[in-house]
Length: 318
Ligand SMILES: O=C(O)c1cccc(O)c1
Ligand SMILES: CC(=O)C(=O)O
Image (tube, protein in one colour):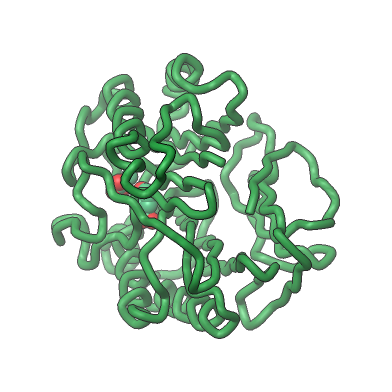
């Protein structure tokens, strides 16, 4: 598995799947035989871009119900869209349930990395519950239904969009793949968050390390389970970067990676989610100081899963 990002479409050879970051989204489809999903994450003024998941072997792609997927012998990519609705819990459970059924049936039960792009993430649903909490409840029910068959809870992102409904996509691997899911010593595991954050805790790990690739989950200014530096973008950026630095340090990642850990200079394919557009110039200049000049970094103006979070960062080391 390898990731690429580009401003243009590359041709479809050896591509497992493609995600188009654009202004309007579109439901997953097979585009010239390649699973393609459009996620509504950019604005008129930001250029769109594509993220490409490279295949490790001959690709077989398909569609089943709402699921669009591809396998290459080592990995499954699967995507499903949940259209806008009053309450998401049942639809989120059903979407994950059908995706997990496919993943286990095809022999890729080892989820490695998932993205949950949730329109109106901090708005209320028709019952007055925050949509992120509503979504998390359905997702947690699906993980509980599949416990033992879907092997672990992986690294993830759960973030707002500039559209409606929910876009899900994930990659998973074979049962025998060597996969390590990591937690952060500075943070409570999200799946143990108390119910003050919602009826079911968020189902994700802080990072997944497999096959020489480190997937870092969306990370924010949270210590323990609490948001710190409320209203202070500078403080939130610093804590977010410190959280990532600790997560990928030799003390933490070195437990599963014999060569040791990484530093912020090793991050690539970085996504920086910023909830207030006016903070983007500051965040950009701070990120320039800490990330490698060769790192590919995009800034996306979307809501984050708690109203008091101003910034969230995800990345890959490969
Ligand atoms: O619910 C999630 O999957 C999630 C994962 C990472 C960060 C975040 O805000 C949310
Ligand atoms: C970012 C976030 O929501 C979390 O770490 O829980």
